[in-house]
Image 1 (cartoon, rainbow, N blue to C red):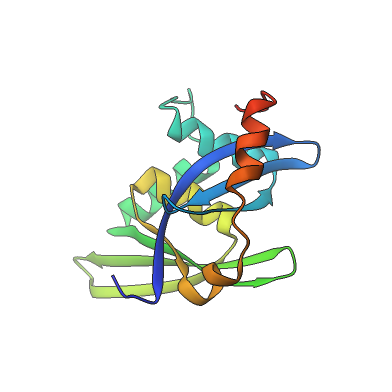
Image 2: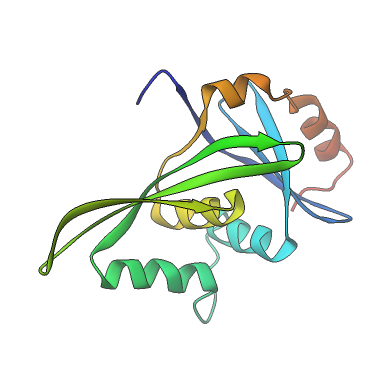
Length: 150
């Protein structure tokens, strides 16, 4: 991929009083942002290999994409304003009634991650955004030592 992107993976999802802290990392640095607890549970279920008895909302969305010949290609965090993160979800579709089409959608990073982990799609942060975010690796280690891990 381009030098202007940093490939990341979920490093940890930890409960907080207000929801869920999502730590994304590249092996050298970790960033954090906060999401709703339900979406955190949805992401964590996939990462832990749990299979719900019925499809969750993100599972349904992935099944719908598949039914229309589309798939999640990648997610990209493109901007941060204060505590608000902005992301883009990239889909690729091709079926018997439509030629290959790439679609870029504005979406919450939490939803993008929930869909990307289900689709095994790569996750990225724009390098200029990544470089301006603080490394939260020490905070993550402190939270893990306090036993707040899921």
